[in-house]
Image (tube, rainbow, N blue to C red; front, side):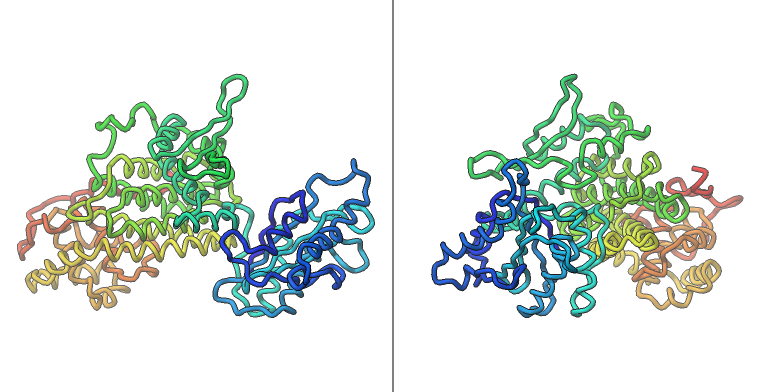
Length: 574
């Protein structure tokens, strides 16, 4: 059950006309009164003379306001909130909705009861799943109500109501969520045939523009390249104070673009909060301009390898670093997801976009991010953007599976961290993002894993037995589970490639197993395949690797050290 406190208004009768009217898209059905402050308010929805009844209702609500001297009347005196049940909840009765409304106005201080002065209010219902509460913000004795933090108080009361009525339990918020689209914005999007409201589209576009950006200039260039209209606010000194953006085709009734400030799109998209990403020495804007190819990845595959390596290190740091470091890494993880969604191939694009949208809620909390620790992830996001879109096949496709697999574990690590901090909404959002990433992984990994499984089945029996022995040596507690998985043959082929490249398979496998989150893996063998191929710097696309026979690699001395992504030093020392 979600209460939504709207901004105060100045015309009671105007709001009542809207609530009792047909709505913007004929969505209001049978508008009628459910409850009121005294139980005797007139109901325009049941009156023979609608116009007279609605004027009388507005006059009744406004009486305490009009009784004050003109100079003492609040400029914005109309309080309005909607209370909505979840889509899967049962339909509440009229009496149940009336009781919900009474509890909400009491909890928010609009009409506290118990002999305390209260405001006049009414409840209008024009749909099965929600009600609207309208009140005027002057009590019967002329005083103002104690409605401070009424939104949080309404949320807390609704959590109690959900349990008592057996409704969907909504995770408690902490005030860091982005503002939801208003009903007017949703109806406008429906009329225009848009899947997203303008607010949602702009928020997503701005997030992608800031992903890995190294300067204000680059950020605004990306916004312009995305086709947004931009307005900036400057101080008399010429310093930039803020910005607003609009969609070219989103217009108001005067045919003017509808602009949204960054801070109204999401708390972390205000210009001061975006600048925090550049406050610590991280990226060199001049050295990594879009047209300077020497400083950017050679292509999507290399960018994805770098992102996988950065995600690997971030997983360790989230578990071992301070809360401020973890908050920075989790925020930067959102940038990596935005960059992946922006550059995804067609068969993974939808799920990656959904993952990025879901994780947006998980990227913020009241723990202030300590910037600088997120450098590797932000550079990875930049690499992904300037590495270009993935083709979905060959090394591009295989490294996409590799990075999605690794980022999924990063997102799970974020969910665990939020769970330990009792950040319920963020933890739920991260888990939702992980589900989308698992689906995207299945699409991305289908072909490259099939190639590896085929190669594994073709290994000679002695070589298969040797790889199984390496597995039992490195991970005795997981060996039988992995040997029974369909992906074992892919892991066997990878171990053979590791050995052929001059590495010690058991040692490298033990290091891969030692790191966290294997217990959440759908296929442990798949996870280990990508970890090993990244750690040993093997091609992700195994179709380019010569098939390994029974020959033992010719190598002496110490095993070859992997060339990318590994560092056995403590993450704290980095």
